Image: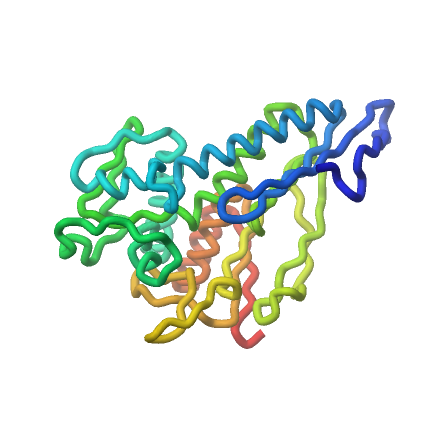
Length: 304
């Protein structure tokens, strides 16, 4: 799909005769709609080919790390890694390694072992329970052991869910593919997890935490990534009370306040994970984690 604003427009560089084309396409992936915009002094055919390769990289992440697909590598880890060491793809290893790093940085405020709770509340599809349910009690990120090269073992049958970090990683992979293809201006947006690369500056409107169809703040983003965590689209009421898909992994309590966290970082995987750190960690821990990643956070509180 071509950009409706620019289409196949050709814009001259101020310094010479090079011509630039822009192409925009979108596809349903990662449980959302992923949009890719690419502009460069290349033919539209080459731009479309590069964008197709970027979508393929995102689809690969989806196939490896989907909780919904029983044939995914993540599903195999959840089924088998508590019984035997599992060989995993290098990309899955990379995301698990990053997840453990953010868990350590946040003292467990970010933790990928929340799948079982999300299953119980209906956000994730049910999976077969372990033979000994008592072994799952108290399971957390410390039960994940990565073995070089590309192997993982779980010390108890926890349910890993990489939904809080893998989408950001997929955005980064798409950007890498486009950069290798010589694309000079890039925007990849996966349902609000987005990254801009190259000589582009874009105006980004943050949703209002109370009324998400309205904008609360406008940011200018260039050569950076942005991610937001908020409960406004995932709240639901169950028999015992209100829940959301955002869970404090240490208390198993849902975040249901009218607030949101937006984080800007150099890469989208870090921004994605750090929104959960900023949501649940103590302020001093959040500040340390943001500083360690060169990131910045914007908070809309429940009283905003």
